[in-house]
Every structure is written in C-alpha cells, then in structure tokens.
Image 1 (cartoon, helix red, strand yellow):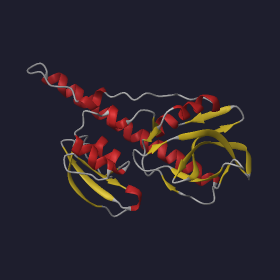
Image 2 (cartoon, rainbow, N blue to C red):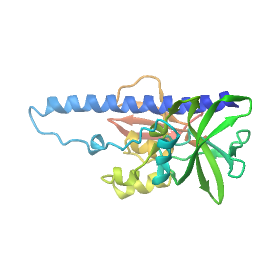
Image 3 (cartoon, rainbow, N blue to C red):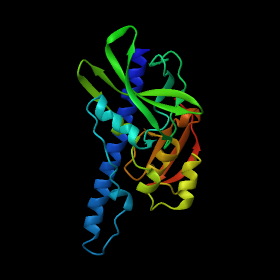
Image 4 (tube, helix red, strand yellow):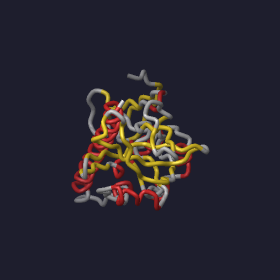
Length: 238
C-alpha cells in the first residue's frame, strides 16, 4: 500500500507537471506567433496567459501548515486519493480508499500532519486533513524521511479561488465547469477544471490534438482544433 500511495502521488504530480509544462510551451509558441503578427497588426494578449497563481513553497511541516489559513481548491482533479482519518488516533486508514478529489473541489484544510506506515516507520507521509460530509479525511501532499521533506502541495492545490483567478471567463463557462461538464469551444485549461487532467492521444501540435480524460471513471475524449474543444465524445478508458 505504501508503494501504491507513492506511485499515485508521484503519478499525479508528474502528469500535472507535464500538462503544465506543455501548456506553458504552448503559451510561449502562441506569444512568439503573436509577436510576429504584431509587426503588421496589434494582437490582444490572451488573459489566461496573465494568470499567475500564488504559491506557498512549503519546506517543512510548519510551513505546510499555511494551507490551513485559507480555503484551497484542487488543481489535479480525479488524481488525488483521500482516506478516512482517525482524529483521535491521528492515523489515516490507508487500507480503505475513500475516493478521489474532484476538479476544483473546495477544501478547508484543518491540519497538516505526518503519518507513518506501520511497516516502514523510517519514512512518513505528509498528510492534509479535511472534513467532508461530517467525516474526517486526509490525503498525502508529500513525504518526509528524517528532516528531509518533499512537499508537492503547490502542484496539487490552488490557494486562491480559481473563479477569481479566471474571472474573465464567461458565466456559462463557469457554470459548466462547476457541473463538471465540457462544452464545445472550451480551451484545455477550462476542460481540466471541469473533468480533470487529460492524457494526449497520438501526435498533434499545440492547437490541434486529442486528449483522453479518465474523468473519475467516466472517460471522455476531446479533440481540440485551434486550441478549442471541437469534438467531445465518450472515451474508452485505459
């Protein structure tokens, strides 16, 4: 189970990192194209490119405790497993998965603690504890061995309301996102907010490609043209 938790955590971070890196690469390409076009006519800057979410950059348990000072929102939906947490015994029930955190799910982190796997007391999980539907749960945001912390919360969580960060999006777009629905015309960031992280299918450039979204067990395939969702259909899963 320890290995499974670590694999899930690392996979979520790697996938999110790759998608973020790819999106940033696309931004660079689009900006380069815009710069060329600006020689003949001015081109408005995409407001999405100007959004820079704040980061906490936690480096130990105390600094990670800053997550309790404001609500947080899930960045990598359907990629983070959470577990029942016993507040009296201060231990997560790693043997029983409670579910996956949803895209842009709002959480109130009550505490950040370390938790030990019984068979490996030398390495601990850094756990964010929260309440949901009257019950207490926790999910891993990093690992610690001795005094060596590796905390990934900045890659997993927003500490600002995405509705405010992307307030330039229309009400219709946000209504669809809040219902976890994808609509034609959405860009990739909007689709990620609605149904989680997608995995590229085959080849394709930055603006024309197909992504497969696990979508919490209800796979969706989206084909993008000119950076916008054009064809949306049920996926086959993996």
